[in-house]
Image (tube, rainbow, N blue to C red; front, side):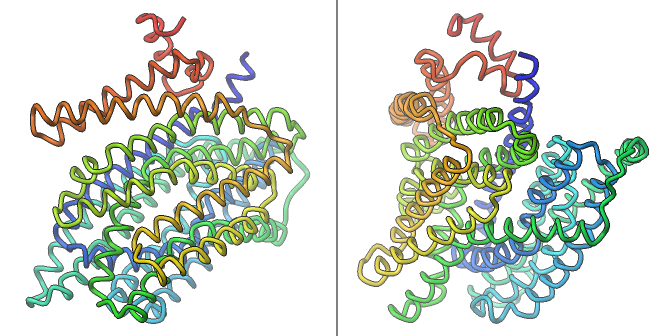
Length: 543
């Protein structure tokens, strides 16, 4: 029992990281509403266009560093090779300084080739952030390899808070500086201010992670002195390991996330050159899709991302020892936990789409469109959560090429779906929704097939998917009914939404325990799980 408890500690660490991720995304959502009020849908579109390209370059330069470094270092820590682990950390810093520096220069000087003219200045402001993000990623990967997510979580929250504050202030002051009535110029400068906020957030997070490293330096040196291993890796060996581990992960993550930028490019080009739509109108339309609906839909996916970050070093360790049974058990626990949260989130976003949009993005001219898009994207919460986890599993067991192939196949098929939808139908943004659903489903399916082939893994369908879905549907019906009833009485969206969410969460929790979708052991594996068990036993929900 003790062994099982220890082996499930990664779920608690994932819970810490997931909580931080959700807090960060909520902060991100909350500040976007006043920011959009300052820069408008047009400015939101310019920012999103530049941000998507920045994200792609960041993926290549540094985004995959935490998971890759975490995997490599965790393998050495499992063998108590503390000297090699620290040397990998040092070499990784050199790697990201070189690669991140080159990527930053490429972004700054090549911005005119990468985005439309109105987004060039925004992308150039993003350039230094790429360099800082690489270094930040190495520090986060180093701590994650030690199976502690607290440092990463704290730095993420601080990063997002400063990002929110600086984005709003910089956008406001830059627009005030521009002495013109040109709304497009205001939109460009406002979007640039938001990009400054992103860089400020990364800078403060890097300072925090460096501070944590300094605090732990004595303990790190003590472990290095204790290391008596004769297996000393050379610098060339370490760089080879980093390259062979990082490159496939980069390719996989790049293709996996490239769909957003590719969809944006296809949508922009077709609307501009085939249908001769004005650039400002295209930016406004895409801003509603990517800057509102997609942003809201991405909130629950933070849980899967956190679970993935904590799974990689854990699964790498058990797989390296040849314990396939324990590896599969960890995968099952992670997927079950993620589905218990992702499925009700998807249902909740679908039934409460308009009230949520009204709260976060209350601009009357885009509420209905954004809500409609969000309903369509709700199902992708489940698909992306699953594919994110299975990506981590394949990387954790060293099958880093399979996610690359799966992502490439899914990307090709979704592109073949999107282009005819935009050319021969009047779906426009709904075409992007259909393409996004197709891509997320294909990634989910192809990764699941790969995991089964590699590990012989079989998920318990009823307890993992069917029972949570039953509980979520009952929760969704409750949420919709309570919202409509409370709104009818008080005529206040915020109050009605808050009451509906609270009651819906209680209904889901109670129904899940009643139909045995959640067991006592699973509750105990969660952060504060013992308190949950004691509480549910007191009110006689759980025996």
